[in-house]
Image 1 (tube, rainbow over the protein chains, first blue to last red):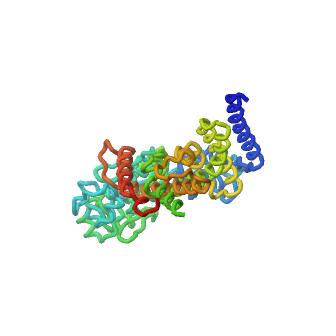
Image 2: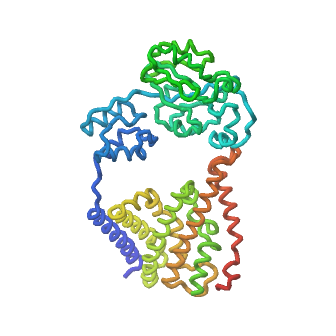
Image 3: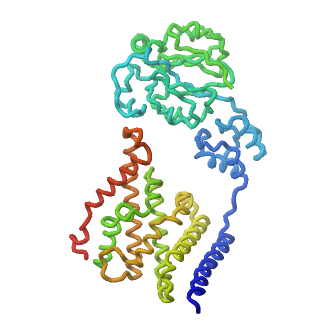
Length: 268
Length: 203
């Protein structure tokens, strides 16, 4: 036989054989695909942030379609819109999500917080906070090296005068920064309505706090006594506002002697 | 027996596929960011290397017998691609957890030059040492050694890269450039094993 013809026959024969084998195998070994889960994955934002508590968007979609969870409102970045669409596919009631935004509970900018040293190591809050708690005297405040900035998938956080600041109009409340912050001073507050917040987590006694930072909560409890809704409580020398009870009347903001309490405005 | 040990030492240390033959650089740079994925990828590579050697080595005798040795590359690529696809289908059906763990790496191996490299080198036998031609057993051991060498390089480099994460890298070198520099230093360090096979009297 002509060697060229033989070569052509051999290669195409192997190709045909492999192709047939693959086609037959894929028919026999076909694994049923979960159509609902695939449709749900299309709807979910795909940021894989883990705010829902599952391993990424596909994990949440699989859990929903298998009936492991009936809560369609777990996707914070997707908000009500996604919740509604998911509920439609699953035939469930949509869970209502109050839009939230992350807030850094610290106002210790470079002009207010006293420094105890100059840190020149790796630019990482996690590492810096292991070295005497960072360069600020205050052990509870923002380290200001931007671990949260790098963690944010929506570029909603900026460093401003040594303190991280969240832009509420970009924040989708995915909690990546909340979980990243080594000081644990980032939390979620309502976005669609105004509320007061104590922007300090310093648990030291008042006199010590005063020496450390000009904007710290000194634990004077004036706000607790002023609040008409009893929405403020004390947590180890630092006041905490319960956003669920707060009506944003502003009484605590006016009473606060150090300006640690701020009224957060509405963002859409 | 001595020759088998020599093959293992050569494949893993002195003639490491990634660090001295520079094959399979793409997954070496792409998948070495985390130790877990690096190990998963390497395990898949070892598996595919062994499987494809087992099929291509006999197939080559068929080609040689018909004077079609020049078709090696095309036929081998075809066979490797088909094999990987079959493995993927079977794994998906029966070992779902392993399929999920390997993820995208399995299809990526289809066109991995380290796999094609090892099956061709098994036949061309150009290690520069072995006097005799490889038998089937030699080829299988050599494939395993190549895969294990790939795994060693991946694991070592995953460690290097985790150190790089916290290093203060100059702006112009950030990302891939510094990774390549690090890879070349690791590769250089493997030169230290040169002459190990002769020194141990394995050949």
